[in-house]
Image (cartoon, rainbow, N blue to C red; front, side, top):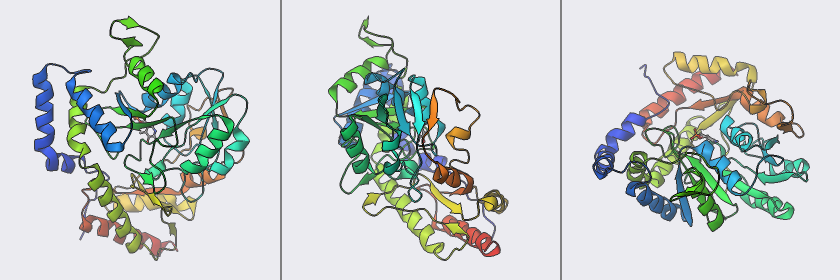
Length: 376
Ligand SMILES: *Cc1c(COP(=O)(O)O)cnc(C)c1O
């Protein structure tokens, strides 16, 4: 039987939580305080408590969270930051907005996260920070990254826009870094109904500075420095407060769907399945498979879409091949980035969201198996 399986379940999620979300929105509307009001303060407390961070600061979006973290540590023009090119453009863009040179190294071929073994070759006297991304919902190798950072006296900013609620058995996000940044845009695992982001930190100095920076460099009346306008508004904080209690259960559901995909697809020959590192809670922001033959990737997506499965790519163009990549002084690639390029050329994201049904996952599996059989 033909079906349509969409990539996201935003409306299903809203329908499930409608009364909790509507109640919080009403409360904000009736409070008369919509920016830096009591709902934001309440949500920030809940967020910090939930993830065991000393501080959580609501911001305008996940991109601002990264550059404000850098700015709060005095990292800017003349400085270099290291990340990898197979991530969303914003990871690097935030470095450029902060005025830094962004240096790219390759990803690990299995996890697709930054390969710690490639980082040291990219460190110069100007290097100030490493920005690992917890891509697709799995933490980067934070123990290895923090060891390198300590040795070279570098800051670490974890871009966890895709991995809220992910962790390693031996570490939590924020324990091995200076700051953790996230995004609450709807397609993320914890999403609001507009733009939003947050920064988590255990450092009091970063907390104080970012709280000023998000509000025009101001603490009450006096503007201490230049800043920006980047505040999570209270309506979004209310939406997120209602959703926060469910995030662990949603992550568990994503993990169950990933297991169902893995079991159903275990005999495929033309496709590689995502890799979960032992000892890591991979929360599957994206269920990204790769065609063994990169030349067949677009055809696989076409086949799935024609058969009712909304498949996408994350991300088909690595940052250094984007039109907006600032060739020249502001960017540099150190070593080969062949793993990142291969992944970009062959990745296919299958529908993955907590509210997907078993019948939908099974339908996707059936179509992927059909494509695999025809392309062995
Ligand atoms: C979504 C995302 C961001 C940016 O978040 P916005 O809220 O859209 O600014 C940054 N980094 C990664 C890895 C992302 O997936």
